[in-house]
Structures are given as C-alpha cells and as structure tokens.
Image (cartoon, rainbow, N blue to C red; front, top):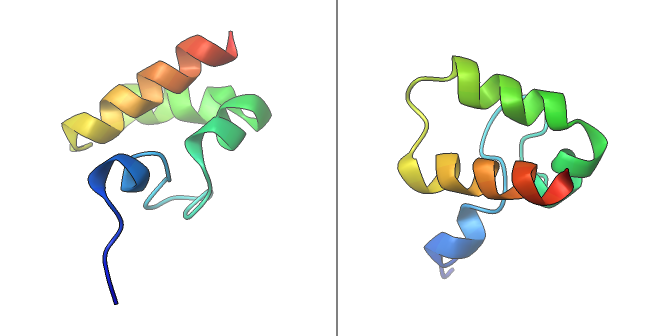
Length: 60
C-alpha cells in the first residue's frame, strides 16, 4: 500500500470530530471548529496549521 503525498494528507483532518474529512468541507460546514483548532491545539503540524488557515480564509 502506498501512502498519500503530504499535500493530500494535509487537506484532510487527521483527528477530532471531523477525522478523515476534507478541510474544505469542514470549512464550509463548521468554520468555527477550524478556528477553534487553530486557537486551542498547540501541537498542530505546521503544514496542517497552514492548510487550516488557507481554507478558513477561502471560506470567508
């Protein structure tokens, strides 16, 4: 089994109530959750943090 490229993995939430869902979908459905993650989860990987910011900005 081949692993996904990093860019694709960073576009999917790896944990939490939306685990496995695309960040773009969650940004449209529940942008407050992504904002909460940015504000409260201190150990987010930098690529995931960047993806969250990107999709939050695009969803506004």
